[in-house]
Image (cartoon, rainbow, N blue to C red; front, side, top):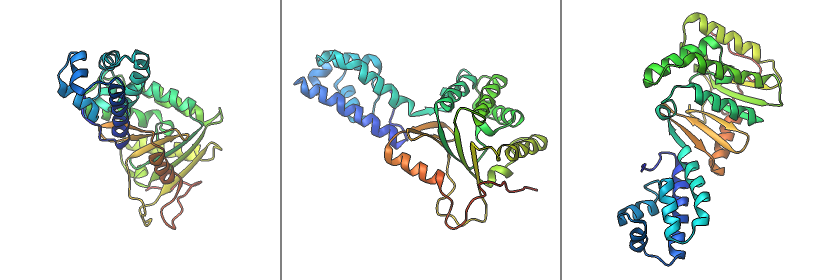
Length: 276
C-alpha cells in the first residue's frame, strides 16, 4: 500500500479510482463489511481504498471485482491504477537499477512528442546538453542518490534526444532562467562548451530559446523544471520525484508559464545572454 501522492493530479486520479470501486460495491448490493468478508481482508482496508488513502494492488482489484461479480472490469481498473501510480515516481525508485533505462524512456517519449514546451530554472534541458555537461550532472545525481553508476550509458541515451532537433517535425520551445547559464554545475571547460552549444542550436528552426534575466519584474516566481509534451502531459521534476500532470486545467497553467514572458520584459528568444 502507498500513501496519497503530493501531486494534486495523482491524488485526484486515485480518488476517482476509489469512486469507481465504491460504485462497483454498491451496484453489487454489498456493504463494506460484506465486501471485505468476500475478499478475505479487514474492513479497514476496504475503507482506506474507498477513501483513496491506499492504492490497491492488481490482486486487490481483481479480488474486489470478483466479489462484485464484475470480473470484466478488472483489466480496465488495473490499467487505471497503474497510470495513477506512475504520476508520482521517486527518482530513487526510477533509478534503482541505474539511470540508463529512464533516459531511454525519455528518448521514446520525445520521439512521440511533436511540440515540447519546457521551463527550467536549474540546468539546460537534456536534449540541449553536451556529453561533458551531462556526464558531470549525472555523476552528481548518482552520488547524491546512491544509485548504481551507469552514467556513460545514461549520457549516451540522453544526448541521443538531440537528433530530434534536426528532423522529424519536432518543435522545442525552451524558457530558462538566467541562473541556468550561471550555475557552475560542471567544471569551467564543460560550462564553456555547454554555453557554446546553446549558441550553436539557437538558429535551428526547431528551437525557440528564451532567457528570463535576473532583472525582469516577476509575475510568475521561479518554479521547478517542467516539460509539456504536446497537450497531453506535463512532467514536473522536483528534487525527489518526477510528477506527471494530465489534468486539463493544470496542463493549461503549465502551457501558459512555458509560453509567456514575465510582465513587460520579453525574454531573448533568438539570442543568448552572454556570461562572464
